[in-house]
Image (cartoon, rainbow, N blue to C red; front, side):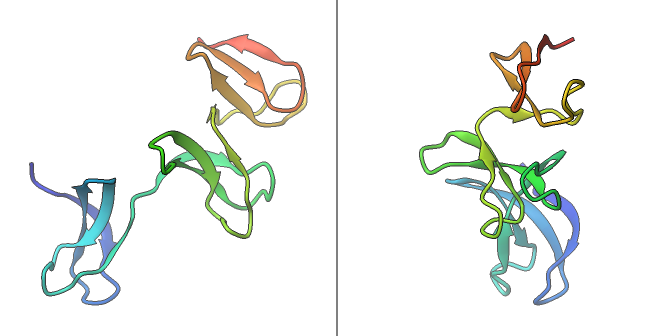
Length: 118
């Protein structure tokens, strides 16, 4: 499978960056390997702002035990993390973060709002 080119250039050599798969999942690396060995983590954005700091985005991450969780992009300055998938629209009752649970339902993290996914 060919590597997927991303719209970034390597800060060390200026060549295009590509998405690669390794034994610990996807990562972004310089296409100039082995001459340039620059890499960085692959971050999947959710499109939701962090409810704790308000400035960072919630990113999909993987724990050491291969469980998916969602954490703030400002880590370690902001330590917000949640296991349920966040929804882009806020709670209609209180305006807080809404998450998916049991694949077909959503619930608010602050109030008692619950609903079915459409």
